Length: 248
Length: 248
DNA sequence: TTAGATGTGTGTCGATGTGACACAATGTAG
DNA sequence: CTACATTGTGTCACATCGACACACATCTAA
Image 1: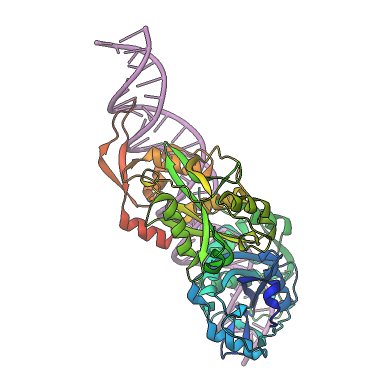
Image 2 (image 1 turned 90 degrees about the horizontal axis):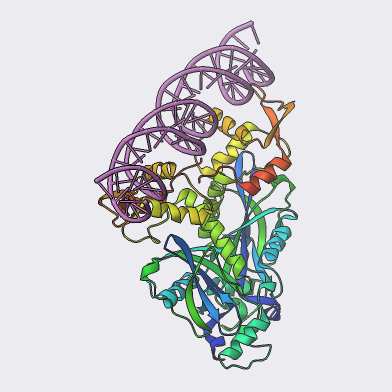
């Protein structure tokens, strides 16, 4: 956190990423443990003066997960002046060895642009940044205390994701190459926060025409073995583009 | 556009508003004719250092229309560094009598937060700002050339509005107190850019349960007189909150 | 005065989608 | 080999949706 960074970053602007993964039939979120506080934070970063805001989000994502070609979506910009926490930011500066007075660029008010990402859990390699001592996946159901308004940001990301379920397919970016119908259902159930009927779920999902059933069945389960499915990449892309149901 | 404004505004940040109205069975958008260019622009403004971004949007809206208590919704933040147009902004500064070198705050790169508003056409009193020579409603179907990326912003606003139709009611903010079913249908048709079946539209709309049919019928029409309707304010609010159809 | 044009109020029919539920099939654990 | 958990598949009633027909009201033109 050098002083000269004032010259290279867009002032008062940051990006924060809600990075969703899926593992063990649980929705996960990638978080950073702050050095400067006993709380966790969403992975975030600043925007270079000539950098597209979206590129900054991609950069943050790649730095924290090592992944490229990720599903990324802007969902909201948070512009409440009270969301900045000068005390925290001062502690944060101290944690990287900087003493600064009130005019320091990092102690000004920040607006943040929120993005959420859907990533392949098993392919990601969590990597802390300079201000954090750890980077880890958290179970969506049992999140720790978050800094500033990050809880609020997370909430808004989830809301957007839920709405996305209604007119776009989800899963290609969160599930492994092949997966079973129950696994896909758990994903939907976790995002929606409610149980779904097994049979109706399957009917509706297959109705979208974006799944291919494989010959192979899952092995080593203590009951009837479910089939594996994979997404039909082309049809999935079309569904993403055109939407699933019209409404009007 | 005084030089001291650098001290009072959040640097590199603006808001732009897509203000929709409805009149003569046509969707309208409020635009400003720039003094500095032969093009039109969306009403926009800057954000005071201690002002909530949303409050800035409300302020812009009120300054341009005189209206309060408006339906306002953030839809996207535009962060492409190439979207700023230094040449235009320099001309803009000249138009208000300011000569500035490249370091001037207004000539830096700007990120803009887009909001769209739905307003009562007849209640609005269009008012130009300091940089514009006119403020007027334009027919949505026949928009003039717009500055910078404002065409793109408008497009994105429309996309969001169209999606909103699928799970939230529209119209309370755009139509007068009482209106006919055909009028409401024209509104939907204009937003969606396609024709709808009269009878199916009525069935679906009434199914939402947010309309009250009045005793009164429209007068002076060269055919069977349609009933007037009004929104049931309470049920409308509930529908806004909970959404119209679930999907999942 | 009346026929025609225009646009509204209301209803029907068949196709499709949805929620609730039953039963047979399959693989593991004991 | 039996019990158990979980999957594959199907049915039924009901709501929703797109396409369409017919009667009604009001102005206009002859």
